Length: 240
Image 1 (cartoon, rainbow, N blue to C red):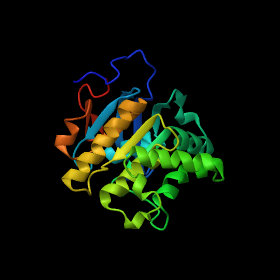
Image 2 (cartoon, rainbow, N blue to C red):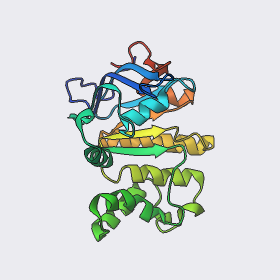
Image 3 (cartoon, rainbow, N blue to C red):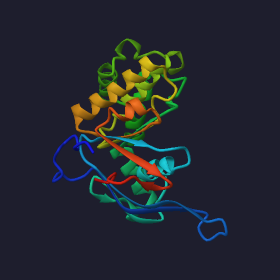
């Protein structure tokens, strides 16, 4: 397995999973356990691909890491905080401030401009819009090559441009961890390569940990690490 991008395992992990299990329909006749004791760590600057066939548990793992679903048991730490002990309100705060999301479907607000879309996470956290927020959003869009389209409505942008806006939005709160769920799945090869390169650049420049779910073998081979999920379990050595 390739070395961690930081090459410093003594650095505190951004993400740490220990014995994570996730079951659905608990207590019912059709109860099913989807994740079976997952152990995994991500460190600052770690760029990690998650691969596996459909139905293997990748989405459940990502939803659990992203604090969208609570695990049934085990320990889940984000930036040192034990998430399994937090209230729903505390989870929302931790998710909003420490995790950025980039999805296959960008989920931009189509009637709003690129600038306004990037401002949204900051607005949600702060409750009002100000000049500093607008300036940071503009800087982020500039950093992803979108300055000429600051005021363009999201629905007027190409697929590749929309994903660049989505990456900028994911960085709005300076998260320690970015979760990217098939972010290149709907893009042509040139746009996909551009979005991948952008995420790699973000990871390196900001020492942000990136968990990159993909079915694209060529892209997964360009990541620092690859974790394979098979039937709710990680491949050998995946948690290192």
